[in-house]
Length: 336
Image (tube, rainbow, N blue to C red; front, side):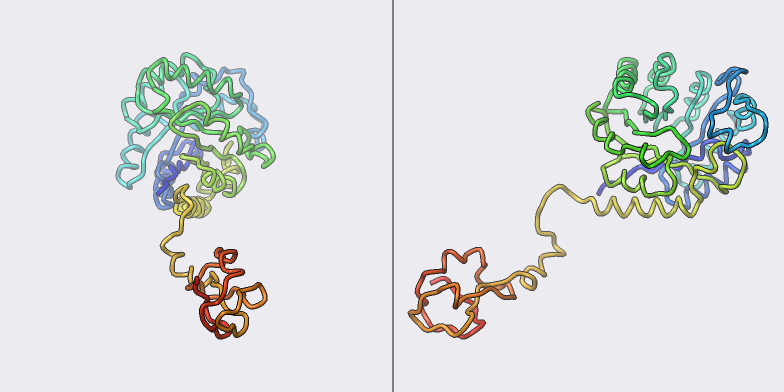
């Protein structure tokens, strides 16, 4: 059965609090997600002092300070914090991931160990970064927000040349806006990304609600990533575009239902259908009393349930033949 990998994106919604991050791990595990993912960075290595907040960050953070550096500095966790969070994940039975946003963070996360490297959309054109990730080996999940197909192909090629084969790369379609308008999602681009020949295609969702994430799973996404928060009213850049724990649980349940329903590509009678064949299909029967030797015609034959007799697909074989015996009305016809 299909099993979509569900990543509960905690991101920086811990607001710089290790204890809040631990609570998020427990909520993600309780919701049934496969992984909980954070973001690892040192603000001064990520942005320059002159970098301004994005429009959505201004809207969601409030205040007069337009410095992206100051905003991110308040959202940092230490290397020791991430080691503790990875241990917490092991304790509660959920996978740990964190996206590195600078070179040193790649090294620190490498020492912790993760099933996948998660490469954010903003680093898809960062050649040295991609090479360093690939030099660590393992598997990678590459987000492709804000990129063209050519840029996605170039990033995959760099990873492949530097040490991670395509068979170990999952590519995520993504629209980088918080929240992303439905008309900007273009889920069909997932099909285009399959041409990259990677291990699979998934979707990183920034829309409101769970509808699009569930639709992506139905389209065959092997990974679905979605931001969540403990409280959407908290200050911070991503809370307002995130799910509540209850919504996260509902999304996981809906995706698991889709997984169960996907089944196989074979068009065949299923075991649960088989008993209904005789009940729902029809057989050729006498429309009125028929005498022995009388010709079968469209006037004296009809089709009625149950489907335990001669199939109506044999209609042309019967019409015009002589009845070998007498039939009462509604009696199933046999081939002469």
